[in-house]
Length: 617
Ligand SMILES: Nc1nc2c(ncn2[C@@H]2O[C@H](COP(=O)(O)OP(=O)(O)OP(=O)(O)O)[C@@H](O)[C@H]2O)c(=O)[nH]1
Ligand SMILES: [Mg+2]
Image (tube, rainbow, N blue to C red; front, top):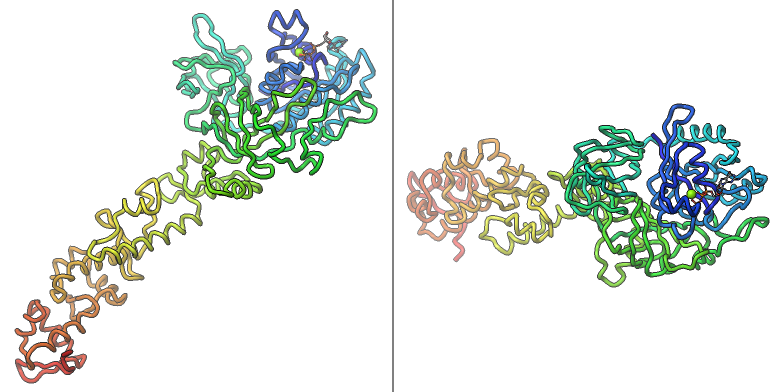
């Protein structure tokens, strides 16, 4: 199925055309028929010559119903832009074009209707002129009459060609169905309708409303009961749940959107295409939307300072009052009066509800760059933020760059499926930030060791706090050799050793601090995981001092031993040395032999030695 919205000035024949194409009545209200005026959105559908099904969302053209018009065109991917041959381009033609341009609508047809009342050629030329610089510049133009049926076959074929060019929406995309109607049906409860732009809804699905979760009890597409519908589609859903749905709310995949009332956006010059006055031979143009920026800086540069402070933001069927805070240039921060489910890349339409009738009231498109923007407290923070956002493309790298650390679920809810690998669990980090954190952790561990030499290492929780991280697992993920974690503490080992060996050496160091010459027994070394290879590596790295096979002490133990031995009456026996060093024969004998080899001590006879350097006294 495809969905096309109508657009165009009041009374130009939109509903008549939809009626002629579908045989269905888009104006359902008695009041609409009585006044010959569309007030509410109308829905009708037909099968095109190719067999493709096409639904129309018929919008009102009257200036008073602009909000309804925006609700209709918002989720529709294409538009049938209607201009009456006998009236030509009119104020709401201009206003609708401005809105479509801000929304980024690129697909559509220009249909000059009421061709039985006047030669359509001048109106076609005039409208093409107005559309030229817009996204609809290349739209095929047709002249038709909804009354005589002239040109309708051609129009059907053109609609077929149009829908064939429309991009195929992702059936797996998260659902966001802006509710355009909500009502109760006796016996089946609450029913809502809307245009599903992408994604899939099936019976039994749980979806979220602002008021809470709801379940899809039944589903209709163009009045036919179905078990699932994939966007683009017009759908009617029968819902079960406590939340009371209302027009302007969205029904969303739980967790897939960020509910936010604060967004940073980039303004786009809505109506840039239409600025600069009308064609010389055309009817009078609407009062120019006189943004100073447009006049003084050209159409491409909009300045947030030129906008009124209070505007209405439109997206889908929602219309929410917002406060505008200019950050710099075309970057502004919007505070919404009510939260909306948004993704980065969404386009809000900013409208000045206070403007007089007859003026173009759509002021700008606002492309969402951040749905969870940071507080701006520092002096100059707003300016820096604007500079950062000025050239930003809101993708994963950008989101991680500004938020530094995000869970996969946060990224998804912001509108960005994470492609990069997580740093741990479901956490994703900005690479530069992560590298800086690693360095800071090493520093913190060093500082802690220096300030608390008797403590075995920096507790993970303390490190988490120091680094300002939300999850202790992140600290553990930052630990790299020579750092190592044991018993919830981070230790630093000698450089170049594998973390477990560094850690064992560190523990050994702690144990040897009380009795530095009592080398660990083989059993203790095994417990610490220090086999011959590990010991050799630790000795090579300077973490341990090898006295003999299987006997290790801390580096510098030999020099310290000589210091102590030099204080003994010379010569001394092994037993005296053993006592002075507070150790066992198992260590004392090979240690003395080592000192002999190094020439620090020498043997006098079978039982006596003396130091070869003089005592420190
Ligand atoms: N002669 C002639 N009259 C037409 C044609 N199309 C519409 N009309 C008449 O123009 C008037 C307005 O037509 P609608 O279809 O209601 O116009 P609309 O654009 O839907 O108007 P709104 O929804 O209120 O913006 C009606 O009186 C129609 O009968 C046409 O092709 N030829
Ligand atoms: Mg109408």
